[in-house]
Length: 59
Image (cartoon, rainbow, N blue to C red; front, side, top):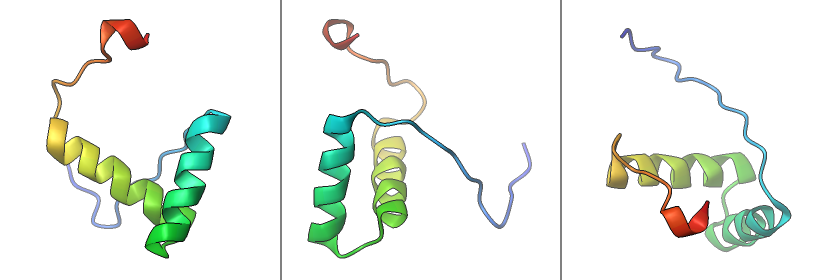
């Protein structure tokens, strides 16, 4: 796999609930919504890696 030095773009559809959380957290962190989403996704991927699965009770 080759690395893109410019990164990559991902589009996601959020529920209203998760959009509200993202809006509140970006205001709290003083980041843009895009920067907040990027920081949260990168943190999740660093923390859980490739083996994370949705808990069965949350599907």
